Each structure stands twice: as structure tokens, then as C-alpha cells.
Image (cartoon, rainbow, N blue to C red; front, side, top):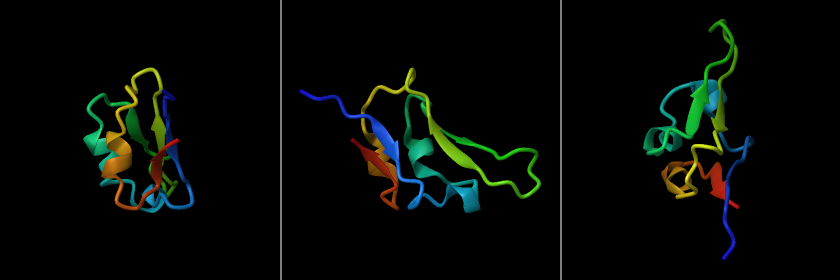
Length: 73
């Protein structure tokens, strides 16, 4: 059986504009999927990151993302 890893499609993800309400980060039980605020808050864009040491490869983040930006590949 192949293990699938979370992958973020940056073209589909709109967290850079919103910086809040990331359902993938909200539903991650292991706190592996996180929103990282951009700089000092002076209009810099946010981004998302996956801590692969904390990730348990459960796929909850991919199911939670309404935009389909998170995939298990």
C-alpha cells in the first residue's frame, strides 16, 4: 500500500487573500496543517504549511478544503 502525502495546490488556495477560515487547518486533529501569517501584518499575504512530522496522513485536510486545493498524492 502506498502512503499518500498532503499536497497544496497554490493556484486553487485563496488563503493569501483571506488569512482566516482555512477549514483544512481547522479540521486537522494533529495541528500539522497551519496558516502562517505574512510578515508584520502590513498587507503581506499569508500562506499554508504542512508539518510532516506532526502529520498522520489521515486525509482530513483534503476532505475539509472546499476549494479542492489540498489533495492527498
